[in-house]
Image (tube, rainbow, N blue to C red; front, top):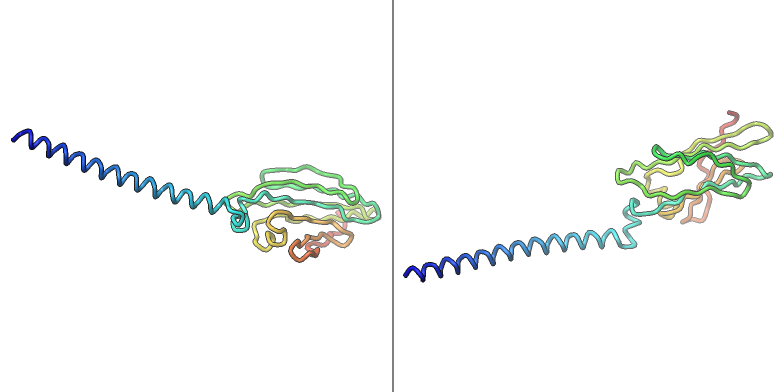
Length: 171
């Protein structure tokens, strides 16, 4: 009689162990499935349109001034000072970055031109977290052009340049 009791205990233990393994495997499979869906969602080409954090952004500062005027450009963010650049007519300065998950990435520039010995300048944001900006920049490339009458942003979707900032006289 005692050997039969031992067999029942062993059998019950085997069944409980088997159920525990099944529950553990179900949970592991569920976690794996959720993880796979998460990875696929963020790896898809659409993810860059929905999540700017996954886009490698490029900002261009273009000297579109006439009469061989040089443009001094000093661009930076809270974390990165990109230095002062002296751009000849038609040349540009560019840099690339990825936004942070807190949506606080901000770059700005101070640019100066020489206009008949009167210095005109402008200080303006060139990248900030805004879906309208992302659309104009085609979710990857913001092109700012300094021209004689002000600072323009190329609206890539509409194939036009929008005047964003005017020059400040004298500094």
